[in-house]
Image (cartoon, rainbow, N blue to C red; front, side):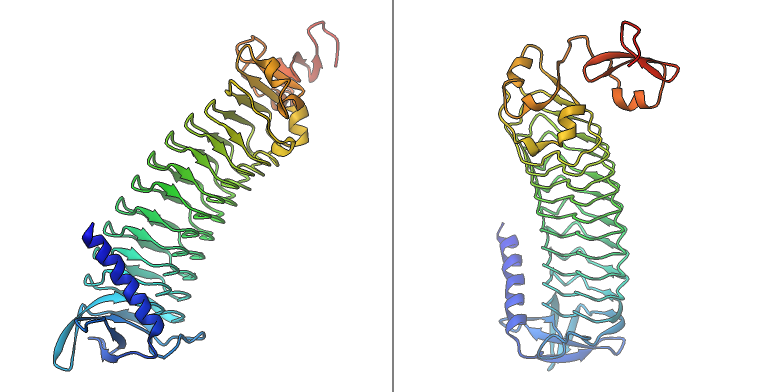
Length: 400
């Protein structure tokens, strides 16, 4: 614990020094002849990389091509270890294409590589303990990154808008992934969250429009606000039974989401949690749920079947579901308590409320199947219908 605290304080110290520094302390060329700029740490026993100017140049911060940071440097006849990449060290280095970080470095600080738009590759050594806030934000050409199993913290906005990033490996050492960390990574297709992470924070994967699969481990207790909002290619998600809260807008506008498993551990489904999940045809609400927010399933235009396992129904807002859902979908409730649902706001708005095990269901998604004009018996609006020769008939043989 003491070591982790020292590393954390060390990185904070770097940040403070970099913020207050008016210029670099000195510069030394690396083995390739590239001039690299350094600041001392507080007791001048080690150094960290800083930027050239006394301020961060918003146009270009100087470095270009491939840069190798040395493990140690000699200055004034004294050998000093390079132990950090300070705030803004390579920010807006528009010509930087690759960087090699030595295994003496323990932290990559805030905005260290922000807006390095030509950076395509980076090797992070297994000495690094933390990746700071905004460390790689806007690195639009970065295609892949392997985070070593020494890293415990990925900061806020760390990889936001890395539009070329297709895959990322997050090791089991990572305990915290900051808000917006991978948001707007529009080419990220899959991600596995390690079982060391306990919470998926605010908008962590918001706007990852090509994300098709995600693995959420059973260490996660909460899915944060807008965590997977606008992940339009996400088709299915299995929420583990460790999760107690699905935050506001967590899966908002996931238009391809056709299947979701909500476990019996969830107590809260936040406002707009599944709003605009247009491919969702059925949903099961477990009996553990105590609160369902406004607009939770609003915009789910194809929702035909809702199974509620809640034994003691509580009032919900009328805008929890679409108006057409109340009129067209079938609500299945536990046996013997349909009357309670019919007396509870706004469950009572459902026109079709059936008790599970009542023998009135075939297990077929009724309206969609009928629309395909397949011969057979189906349920529509709570009534058994027969489809034959493209027409619908009731049990008395009368055409509908």
